[in-house]
Amino acid sequence: MDAKTFYRNFVRVLLFTFVLSVEVGSSLAQAWPNGVGPLVSVVKSRQPSAVRTQNFIVICADAEFASRVSQAAEKQRHELAMYWLGRPLPAWPQPCPITVSASPNLGAGGSTTFSPGNRTIRNWRMNVSGSQERILDSVLPHEITHTILASHFAPMNKTVPRWADEGACTTIEHGSERSKHEQFLVRFLTSGRGIPFATMFTLKDYPADIMPLYAQGYSVTSFLIAQGGPQHFVKFLEAGMSNENWVLATEEYYGYPMIGKLQTAWNKWVYDGGGDVSRHTADALLVSRKSIQQASVGIRNLENARVANNQTVVSQPIQIAADTSRRPTTVADSASSGSSEVSWYRQQLDRTLQSQPVENPSTSLTMPSDPPSVGNAKNPSRSDQDYSVSHARPPESLGQSVYR
Image (cartoon, one colour):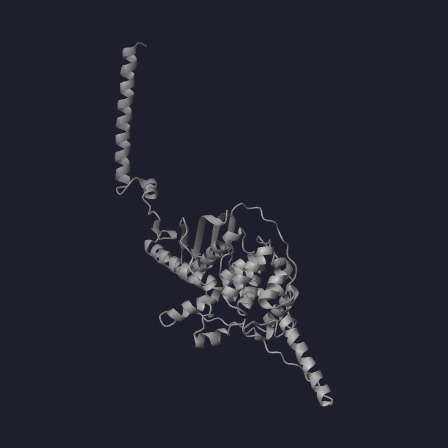
């Protein structure tokens, strides 16, 4: 074939291809007048909206809700930092991306990942999901509390023990979410799934049986916060994390001379249905050094009085009052007196009480005939380079999705 013949055939192929493409395009246009079928509809689908604030980038399909989440995130970041630390957090060098999946029937859940190191935090990433209501009043503040604690402890180059991290984050959720953990706690403790405090205090990663960690961590954190407030609890964590001597930290900040004494007091508090902790503090139980010294002084005074008066003194039980200097008033008392120790969520609830009805789940627990106690749990080692905190939710039997 000479060059002229080859060129002539090549031009014919080009013309045929052009005519065929025009005919196919015309047929597709008649079949789908608004676009080229499903392929174009996917390409033209609505892109997620991204809203940027100083510390967050919120990505959500709903532009209006993305704006609401961004405003709530900044507001909660400030208020929760004041609640836990007593001071605002400085702005992060890089904003934290928040990916939002909102749907009325979607179970509440979330996760936060970051890269710790060199006394700072990098590569924030947060995912939140659920109904719009639960995202704003439970999932978002839960995950933001993770970022506050991580930022606060970053200079120590250490991560918060899982029980305290998840426990603290759960305490500021909506009451309906917290009540599920309270119900599960009794179930776990009475079925041998509790975690001994000596093990729980040193966990750096999630155990295989994760839900008892959430329920028990939330309950123990609530028990300790009720004895000194949220900022006292953070200082307790600082002391324990500084040298991993949780026995010393527990005695210094809460008076219990051994972790076992704290575990016993907490067990009795749970058995009594929670609520007021005044009867379960170390001083009230006469196990703190201060209460023991007071008791010794009382006994010596009785003996001295008997010798001085040269008479027999009928010995009476010595009543040692709990040291209220460490303990805040109860939630009910705080609410009526305007105390700053009222829980963060309670403060938010009071602000919207008249404009939005809220659930008020009972805080009492139906306990078995025998007191519950903790059992055993595994202590797996950490292997992840990046640190991840997941917002575990109670199983679907209570209307929530399984943890992510």
